[in-house]
Amino acid sequence: MRLSRYFLPVLKETPAEAQIVSHRYMLRAGMIKQQSAGIYSWLPLGFKVLRKIENIVHEEQQRAGHIPLLMPTLQPADLWRESGRYDDYGEEMLRIRDRHDRDMLYGPTNEEMITDIFRSHVSSYKDLPLTLYHIQWKFRDEIRPRFGVMRGREFYMKDGYNFDLTKEDALHAYNRHLVSYLRTYERMGLQAIPMRADSGPIGGDDTHEFLVLAETGESEVFYDSAVTDIRLGAREIDYDSHEECRAVMEEFTSLYARTDETHDEATFNAIPEERRRSARGIEVGQIFYFGTKYSEPMGAMVQGTDGQKVPVHMGSHGIGVSRLLGAIIEASHDDKGIIWPEGVTPFHVGIVNLRQGDDETDAACEQLYTALTAAGLEPLYDDTNERAGGKFATMDLIGLPWRITVGPRGLKNGVVELTSRRTGESEEMSPEAAVARVQEIYAPHMG
Image 1 (cartoon, helix red, strand yellow):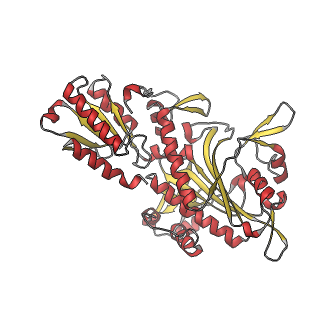
Image 2 (image 1 turned 30 degrees about the vertical axis):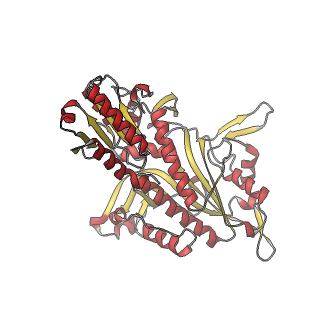
Image 3 (image 1 turned 90 degrees about the horizontal axis):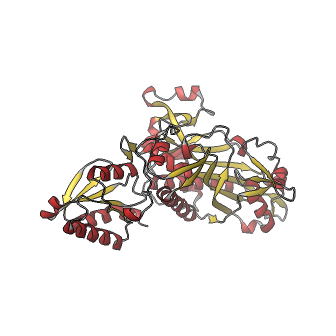
């Protein structure tokens, strides 16, 4: 993409309403525009990153054997009355009445609707196990929306639902989701720690939240510092294996890590003092096992192996796709702007032309742009007439992980400059070598 043809409305000043880093930088980098309290338009750069995050979530869900579908944003209230949650959910639910005087709601979650879909089409244990998921806009009428996309009213979320014959099978689905979430977050350059949490209005006794440590986190968390040393890495896990998924579950949850709602001071104090930590965390996902909480009242039954009708065991699993974008910025930035991890960057590399209008410099930039594009990469070429300092400031603000700087002085020696946004280190090399190096960097992220 050529910057002269792109829509990137960057701001030099920080808007007064922005209270945390991610909100400030998303506004300044032209990623979002507030339309009303807690509701945002996603401008091209922000939308591009949102899609990168969404694609990773889709890939890892389907890698784990989960099946995508799409449910509507508006739901009939009668389904929620069946489960008993319509009156219990509270004022966060936006209730609507249509022209035919039917009670509707803007969905904050989809347990009722997915259960209705299941009971309409599945009647035998032979069709189990089954996990369905979708990525859809949700709405919760927060009393005080704040922190940009971190605590908005409208948000983009992946929610998945497993249906199993037995509790043992449902707990395998729980463990399988934990593994798939760990891989999802690591691909985004995040370390999200699974922590024992409170189930809230979803219900159930088994639940873990995934939290990214950040000073601006809304939750206080307590953990054994050894948990931050664990990574899934490149390990291949057989998602069909109960034993392998359980082993990963135990590895990542055997050490103490809890949110403030479930914190146990006595257990925490039994950890060696030098490993005890308290911090703030940003929730980016949660998994639940809630048994037959929805299937029994809503009649989601299947014929079991003995011919008798039994309610299925269920769980739900959510990832805050739009919230993840803010969480990544909170975890990866400096005083100049965002620092995108390679897995989610909107563009792979920025090209900065230091002498726009100079024939040799323009030609070198065009050749780089063509070569990078031919290699399957997405460069952002700053071909504007902005001064060099302004170009560098924009590249630092929007946070592309790598920058190639092209100027007459370097070209006289046959070199351009490749710079890492994260470290600030630069290296001079030929244009061909710069293209090859960027290809090498992104090879693990190109599927």
